[in-house]
Length: 125
Image (cartoon, rainbow, N blue to C red; front, side, top):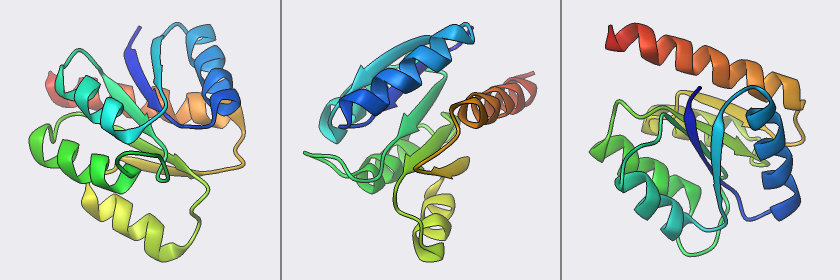
């Protein structure tokens, strides 16, 4: 089981993500703006962050840059409707471990989360 932070201002989508990740055995915290997400992640205790690019207060890109600089070991999966090659490359270069565009297949999200967590745990050992 992992403790996962989901930062997305789309309440319905965030609840779907929570449902799928909790069904896979994870504990999930949903937050609807980048400022709250950054503050929560800085508080520690999360094994992974699922981050939307376009949120109020702070954008996902700002949160990604801050967390990648402060906690480079914290895996971040971008889950966003931004689909350009430039957006994807920028996020991966800024420290995202993976990038999934909306609309997405919920089971694919769970599989990607599982793979990221498995990889992160292997590095820790």
